[in-house]
Length: 142
Picture (cartoon, rainbow, N blue to C red):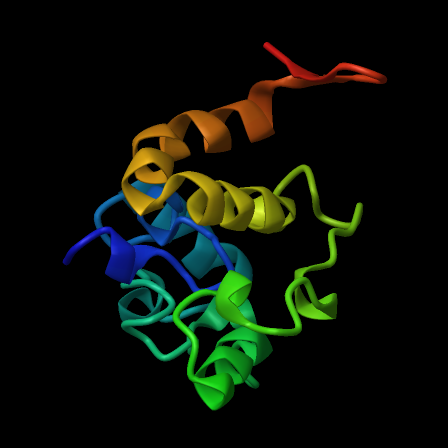
């Protein structure tokens, strides 16, 4: 699968996610099965676009952002006249565990520099998100 097809319309890099089928470890899969009672065959994710926004981590209603993008006929949220909208609003809740606050940054990088440049830096962006330190007035530092 090409990397653009594994990038969610909201800017999340599915190919870097721990739940993505090629990244999922037996250890993580076992923990999810044990803690959440999710059947093994439902744990690995193939990406937002490939699964039509339907995966256990999105809940039973799926992804409202993907539904919106499909209704509006755009490829990425930044192609929408309403960008940025409340679907992309950051939140402190879960920010240490989930990459959702990276969405706006990723979308802005893709829009400004193109998909290929963003793709080359996407692993570093995610790594810095989870391991970097925030310094008031300077942003993120290693």
